[in-house]
Length: 216
Image (spheres, rainbow, N blue to C red):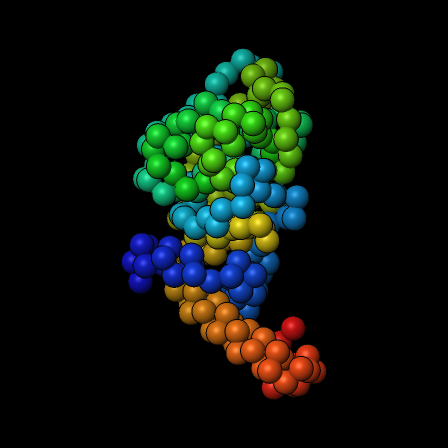
């Protein structure tokens, strides 16, 4: 499948089904820590990951790697920022959101804080998933170390190009090399759950649905 076909397919499946399919096919947890939550809206997000690594620094430096990938990554990217140590500061804010919207990106996923939430909601309605919210700046506290290298976000390894799927349930990382198989299984899971739910309603029995489909 092409990337566009994968993205379109993952938009149709439940995030939970994608998580279950990653469990079975990849054999490792694909969903991020539950602390990584939608902070702006509850829009479904799907797109390829681009990555940034940030860490402590006492230098007053802009987050250059993050600024560069916002301007240079293909439209539809999901910007994933990893943090070496959480210093309770915001690694994303209103100006970075403006850049992401201008470049037609899908979302930002942060293993740290976001700020300017009121502004982002009011002016952009851009999806941001973050570990926390903080008014604190990174200047004099953090700097960016690298971009588009494998990083850990929310307890899960994210490689550039992995498919990120998220909504109010949470965020799932689908390894690119397994994406087609994961999508096929997630679609099957959704179909089985639809049929199982219909049987439960029609029969008036949860046990009957579980006995036939073996899924809970």
